[in-house]
Amino acid sequence: MSFWQIWNMSFGFLGIQMGFALQNANASRILQIFGADVHELSWFWIIAPLMGLIVQPIVGHYSDKTWGKLGRRKPYFLVGAILASIGLVLMPQADMFIAFLPALWVGAGMLMIMDASFNIAMEPFRALVGDNLRTDQRTAGFSIQTALIGFGAVIGSWLPYALTNWFGISNETVAGVVPTNLIWSFIIGAIILIVSILVTVITTKEYSPEELNSFEDEHLGSKVSVNDAEKESSLFDIFEDFKKMPATMRQLSWVQFFSWFGLFGMWVFATPAIAQHIYGLPYTDSSSSTYQDAGDWIGILFGVYNLVSAFFALALPYIAKKIGRKNTHAISLVIGGLGLLSIYIMPDKNWLIVSMIGIGIAWASILAMPYAILAGSISPKKMGVYMGIFNFFIVIPQIINALIGGPLVKYAYGNQAIFALMMSGLSFLIAAALVSKVKDVDDVIQK
Image (tube, rainbow, N blue to C red):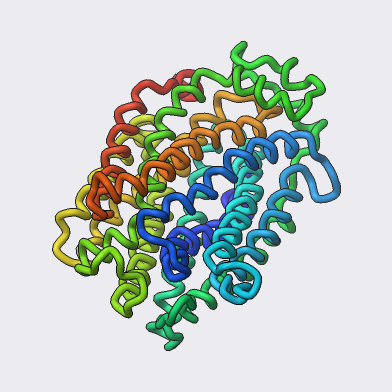
C-alpha cells in the first residue's frame, strides 16, 4: 500500500484518539466537579480497562468471522464511533439527568459507554493494519497509525484551553456544573470522531475471507497451526486461543503490563498531582479558578506529549531499521520513565513541557513497536482475536492500578498524588528492562 492508502486506512484513529484524549485529560476533573474525592478517582477509572477486558477479545473474535457489504472490520469501528460520540456529548452534561440520578453516577455511566465504544472501535483498527499490510510494511503501518493518534490527541488535549484563551469561552465552574469550554470540547470531539471514521470506511478496501485464505504464512513456520485457525469456532475458543498464544506474545505481555500500569497512573492522577505539586493547591480543591487553570494546562501538557509522539512515530521505522525494534522500544521507555520522574523536580509549570517530551517518545513507541513485533508472530487468520487478547495485558495492569492507586495515594503517599506519577516513571523503567526478554520473529527471519 502507498503512504496515503495507509494514512486513510488509519485516519479514523485520529477521531478515536481525540475523544480518548478529551477523556484522559478531563474525566478526573469532571468527576471531581460532580463530587468525587481524589482517592476515589482510580475506582471510577476502573470502568475503562474493564470494558477493554470484556469488549476487545469479543470484538476481535467476531470481526475475524464477519464479512458483509461494509467489510470485515469496518462495521465494528463505525458502530463504536457512533456510541462513543453519544458518550462524549453526554458525559460533561450529566447534571441534566440529576432529577433521575446523581450527576456523578451518570457521569461514570457515560465514561463506561465511552470506554466500551472506544474499545469496539480500536481493536478492529489494529487488526486492519495486520490484515492489509505485508510484514515489511507493518512497522510503517503502526507508526503512521501512531502519528494519527498523536495528532488527534493533540487536538483533543488542547481544545479546552484553545476555546477559553482564543475564543473566550468560559472555563469557570459553579457547584457541580462542568465549565462551558469542556462541554463544547466534547461536542466538537464527537463530530470529528464520526467524520474521521467515515473517511476510513469510504476510502479503505478490505480483503475478503477468500483472499486472506490465499495468503501463505511462510514467516510463521510451524509456530502457528493454520488448520487451527481455519476450524469452525465459537466465542469460547477465545480461551483456547489464549492458551495457545505465541511465545513472543507472552514475552511482550510483561512489557505491556508495566508500560500500561504507568500510563494509567499518569492519566488518573496528573491533574491533582500537578495542581498540588506545581500550583500549590490543597488536595481538596477541585472547584477554584486556579484548579480549572491547572486542568486546562494539563490539557496543553498532554497535547505536547501527543504532538511529540506524532512526529517521533514517523521516525520510528527508520530508527527501528537501524537498531532493531526491541532496542528502539527499550530506549524509548527509558526516556519516558525519566520524563515522568523529572516532574518532581521541575520548578514551574512551563518546565513540565520538557518532561512531556520524554513521555511523548515513550508513548509513540508503546503504540507502535509492541504491535509491530506481535503482528509478525501470529497468523493473519487469527489477527483480530489475538489483537483482542493482547489487550488483556493492557487492561489488567490498569485494573490493578485502579484498585490500589487510590488507597496508595491516601494512605501511603499522604494524599500527595505526585508520588503516583513517580510510581509510573518507575514502571516505565521496569518495562524497558523486560524488552530484552522478547523474541522478535520478523527480526530473526530478516537476519
